[in-house]
Amino acid sequence: MRVLIAGAGPTGLTLAIDLARRGVEVRVVDKAAEFFAGSRGDGLQPRTMEVFDDLGVVDAVLDAGIAPPPLRTYVAGEFAGEHVMFALREPTPDVPYPNGRMLGQSRTEAILRERLAGFGVRVELATELIGFTQDDTGVDVVLNDTERMRVDYLVGADGGRSFVRKSLGIPFEGSTDESVRMLLGDVAADGLDHDFGHWFGLSRDPREGIVLTPLSGGAQFQFAAPLVGDPSLAGLQALLDRYSGGMDIRLHDLTWSTVWRPNTRLAARFREGRVFLAGDAAHTHPPTGGQGLNTGVQDAVNLGWKLAASQHLDTYEAERLPVAASVLGLSTASLKKYTDGDADAHRRGSEFQQLGISYAGGPLAFDSRAVPGRVVAGDRAPDGPVDEKTRLFDLFRGPQWTTLAFGCPAPAEEHAHRIDGPALEIYDVTPGTIVRVRPDGYIGSIS
Image 1: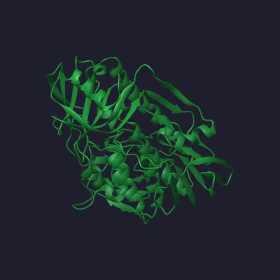
Image 2: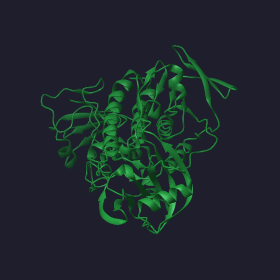
Image 3: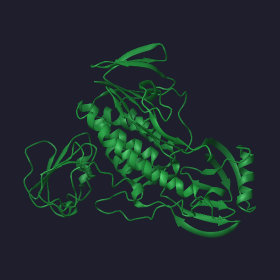
Image 4: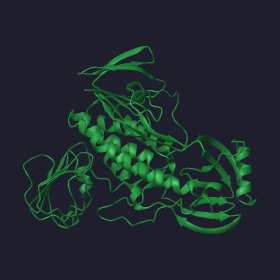
């Protein structure tokens, strides 16, 4: 089997790793001449950390990233308080990564590229998908007007302006709010404690202020500020001087910046024949919710095992489109807090961590119990201790389905395990229950 992925962001890279570890021939192409070098999506939610555990990159992400820092707020140059974006929690047996991680997107992508290279696959830069046609058995693609190849499947992970989506004529429904424009980017700052985030404003209205969040691996901060006047370093410094009340903070080394507008859209379809959409090509989110990158990663792991097996492909859209719509609702609500001037616009609840996403009631969720327990088919499969050295996530890690036999002999099949003790309590199932866990870490069936 051969799969072509257009787009080498976190979505495309995650999908490529998942396919490559299953022995699928995969190519990842990107029209950019060089790798992205900015922070952009810098918040990795807990469920994404669990995916990275499964893909074998979580240790590298933990080492490279930082915990979500407290945010110090200043109004007219006076300290006004400190709060956290997420209420930090201690790890538990069922949730080993409760707090996620802050890591600039370019560094996340570098970690994923290194993992992909371990499977002998490297991203092909300056390689643009310029055309494709499909039939019942495959997709013919054209790259750079010089190379033609045939693949079994094509995946458009090529961003909000997706060539793949536009070529398919799939509507991208939603809106772009031209009334709100912000300048985002990465800059170093002298005079700021790098262990904290900092927000400066003349009042508590988040629309009239500048926020700087520390980036790991150096002295830079990611900043977000209203687009007022000159977007250069000098213009940003003048804006900070105004909002900070003249505090002695010197900005330097502006390495990346972009103008952002609220762009909230959802593709009408995620699939047409042998061509699929994932990540920003299928849904774009305002950054206020910290959901875009993470939702794309979840698209990738949902699609990867289905493509590799050439099975259940019709369930990709059925499962992921409703989730994307729900997550967009969260992001939109968070954006509304910002545009309404809500002083708590920076705070996030547990609903943003993506641990509660479920495919219960969907086409691949089967539960034959008379009385459901704590977990149901379609839910995320929790972690838990199997013995002193082994966790359930250790058993799940890899491209396979996993069968758990709770308090009874395991079936005579590969990747089947008898589970007793604390893990049985976490799942809250009666002895004799059989749980089958999908390759993407969700419960497929309970019997």
